[in-house]
Image (tube, rainbow, N blue to C red; front, side, top):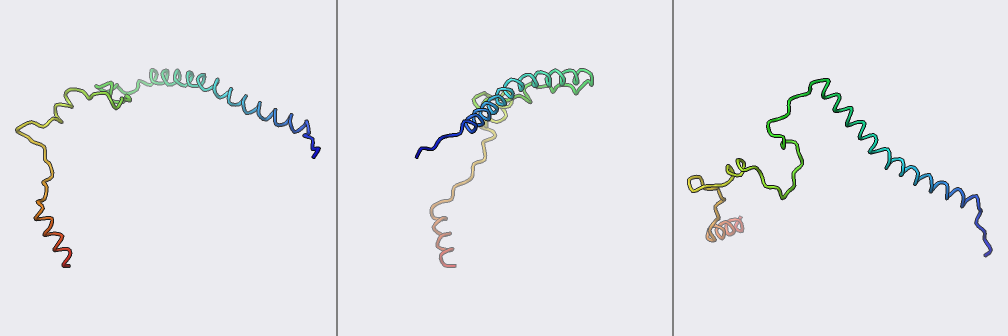
Length: 107
């Protein structure tokens, strides 16, 4: 019962743990630095190569919230009016449903 833990094993565990933390720290520090350089490279590339013109609606490729209302012109086309009512599926009467069930039961 008098087992001892080797100090070399403790030291190895400590160094491996510190190595993992150092790697996480480097990734956390280097990622924004790399992103800044990639963004500047992309901006310079677009300037030098002329890129395509932006679309008419600058919001076309933006991320929108689910709570954000659509533009007015698109909402107007979706609202049904009295002249063009929406097409709803017609409900079957109970008699038709019962008749279909009896027909299926007989087969």
